[in-house]
Length: 188
Image (cartoon, rainbow, N blue to C red; front, side):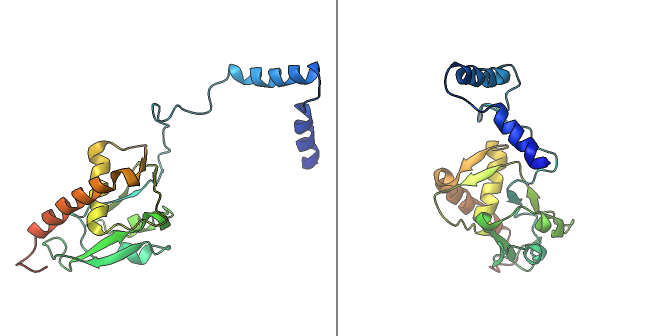
């Protein structure tokens, strides 16, 4: 029964040759002229995202306690433990690297991150595009891009990583120096 309905809908707008086909095509077009536009004029207009939208993961490196719970929770294994300077907040000196090209945005890592830390969250950044097949961010680069998303107001956007890669590298050096300045007793 369902198949028959599908055929009826298709045959309704089936175009025939001659003037009747042209009139049917014009009627089909005209029926959409006065309806609300189904698309937006991106980037000038932004769609409202659902409240539960899970965009690109952001990493607040200053809040990370180095527990690695997020790494264990990740089903795609796109989070990695990386050694770094030991600080008052991050006593083990473990930081998290991220491979966004393999992330499925499930949110399990955000849920696993202890409330004491709260270093992982979802941004409103819709997507990152790149000519590279694989993107790997060191903890410093990930923290840098997370800070840039907030600073530059890249909410509800899609960004071309190839165009901002130099900016991210520069910002990551700044983040690394900031973390190293908080080092406990000269341990690195």
